[in-house]
Image (tube, protein in one colour):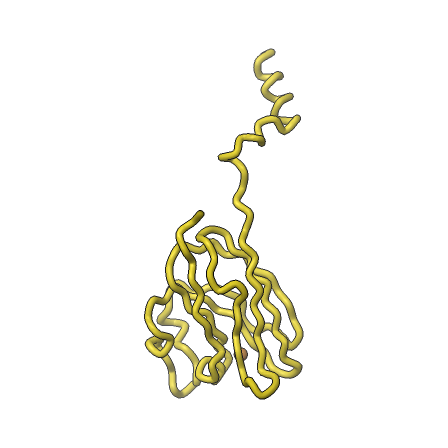
Length: 147
Ligand SMILES: [Cu+2]
């Protein structure tokens, strides 16, 4: 009984939280800009574009004044042109991609945050509003082995 009380007191005092192995991994912060303004046309940029494996927190801003955009990400080792694409809808065929993650349909000027757990590999990030993928709203993202 006494032992248990001591243990409980230590837990309450937070003394079991100091073991280094038990510390949670801080997520890597990535800033994503979705843009369709200016002479540069549509774009999706990630800063940084290479991160270590583990938790990644994406802060995604739709900088458009008028259009919805979205941020989808998928492990993909090929060129983006190899993604299944539906010419009729002018969209990547999401039903044929099982590992798609991200945030759909951000309103103009909206900022959202999403945290994903990512394994090492090569990824493609893109916007799948009709026509936007072909309009260069896509970027390569690299997840390296954890530090
Ligand atoms: Cu878009």
